[in-house]
Length: 275
Image 1 (tube, helix red, strand yellow):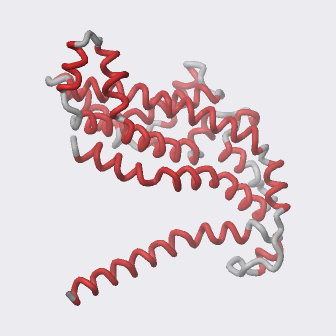
Image 2 (tube, one colour):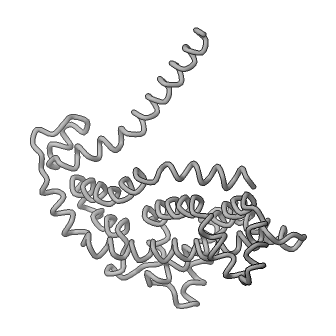
């Protein structure tokens, strides 16, 4: 009994320390975003003597927050929608099709997850230019679809195996075709893993910096993260504004993650283990 209490206390203490370490950078960003530049350099850790919310209004204007947010939303919605549509169909078909060809195709998708992005970014940018999708938010979204379907197919493939085949057989008896069976019967049952994929891909696409930097050249098409980077100058770094902009950028992600975090672990566990 004492051993269990001691182990529980140790785990609680360990998790508490981990939570404090994880939250500390967020705390520094928030308190320094409402300081003046001089006050921040005087003490980076201390609480502000006066709240300077004008940093947020200035950051709002300098990064063109509304337009940049719209660009990020367009890229995220198209990218996530395309990933879910393609991966759900592919994961379902590969899961329900037996044979070496199906297994080989699925293995290729899994193997592509092991390829680091930095090793393909130069060929990817050249291919994007040759296909005339470089420099466009819609082209950027298409690239996200191509990069994101492998993980989504893996999760859908495992989740579909937990759905009884009898449901599809009953739908076929009622006269449903393969697409009708999928969209009317199977896809609604994939809601937990679909929400998980949508949240994970939203966090990835919204916070990604490198791919928009490689693909977008027009400032009017910058995503929110890329617009925040414009505050970094060679001779001028307004850290108070930068931190305020970063807080504004991270706020939608924190809110969405807070509402839907329970679906993430549930969907990943069901998608990976049931397969």
